[in-house]
Length: 234
Image (cartoon, rainbow, N blue to C red; front, side):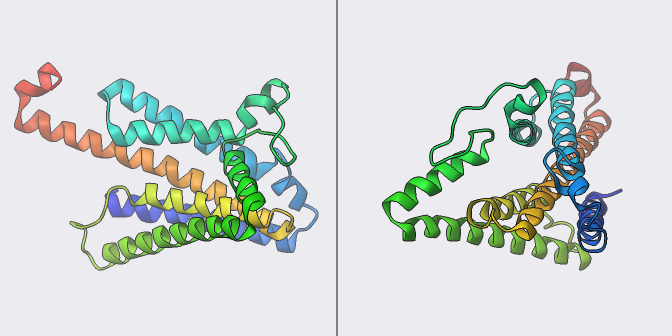
């Protein structure tokens, strides 16, 4: 599978997951809590995909040495895995510290909530400007990803960014955070937030797979063209 094929495969999985979650939420209300509750199917799947991204990147770096895209994806995946598991509090049973304005500091996303609350205390308009900027950045990244997909469909693979999946991951995380900050009291939007986070985790796992395959291809080319360098690990 080429780079564009992997890209399409990632978005196909994301589309199937999103449609399936929406279908269950609408057509099977009895199953909705099992799907979307705390530590439910969606949250568990999100944690699993973040773990796959983090440990897959770590294994790739251990195998091939320091590669910035894999290192970045691994660190992001690990941070988001910690966020999804409340820094391990739900796994090990310890109590997270209190959060400014109420609640608990049980994830990196809560730091953004603190910034929002502090800005709101200074000036509500400033707080909503922060939300607007985050939303605008997420939409801009979504548009960029869409243009990359259009390039692929048109056969313009030379100008297809190998980091499109990572940009899509950031866009989905941004949209989830916008909902978390501004509309967490809405059950429908909260459900969307959980699904967006799962989509983002899937995209990050596919990004690690893509970068690992690109590194494999690069090393094969090195082995063919410069066998002396390949033997010395250069």
